Image 1 (tube, rainbow, N blue to C red):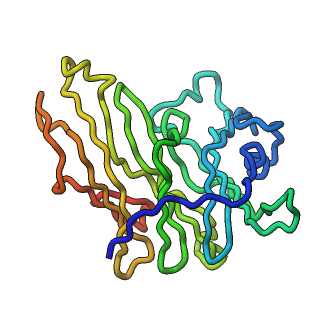
Image 2: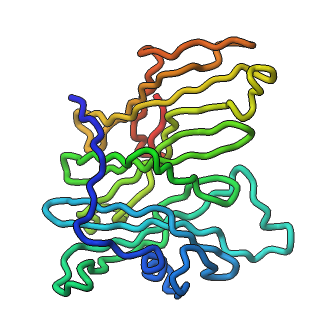
Image 3: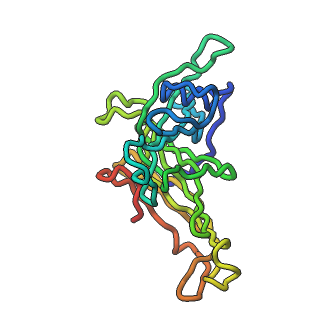
Length: 258
C-alpha cells in the first residue's frame, strides 16, 4: 500500500521567530539575528521551521545548523566537500494559555545529525513543499525540500527527518533525527554551455512514501521525468523504469538507495 506524501500543515498561530529558536537551542542571545557566532568561532544559522500535528497536539519545530568550533591554527579549519555541519532543533507546542504566548517551549536538541558540505547546510527550496508521512507507531517522517549548486549543476533533493513523540521510550532518546538525503533531480544548464561542454540534461522527481510490512519507517520512491546522460555526448528521456527506491538502513540510520 502506497501513501502519497501530503503537503505539510500550517500553524494556526504565529510560531516563534528564528531568533527565538536559536536562543532556545544555543542559550546565546543574538538580538534577533538569524545567524551569529555561538562559541569558539562556531556560527549558528536558522534553517527551517515546520508546524505539524501529532496525536491531537500542535507542534512547531525550528531547525538550525552550526559550524564546528575552531581550535586549529589558521588554515587548519578550512572546509571541503566532506565538511558537514551539525543540525539542531527546538520544539514548541501550541498549548499556551496566554494570547500573546500561545507556543510553549518543549525542548531542544544540540545534535540531531549532520548535513551539507563545504561547511554549510543545503538551501531550503521554497518552491517545493515539505512532505509528511505518519508511521503506524505514531512517528512523523518529514521530507524537507533542499537544493545545492556545485560545478555548474543544480541538485534538487529532500533532507529526511523523523519526529518521535515517544522519544522517552526509544533507545537513543532522540526527539528528532536526520535520516539522510534523497536526491530527486538535477540541471546542468549552467555548466553544459548549450551542449558545447557536455550534454545538457534537466530532470526532476516526485517523492512518495511507501508502507513496508514489518517496518515502522516507510520506503521512499522517486519517479523522475526529464533527461539524463546515457553515454558520451548522448542523452535520453527518463521513464518509469528509472524510478529509484530507497530503504531505511538501521545500521547506517539513514535512507540508502536499493
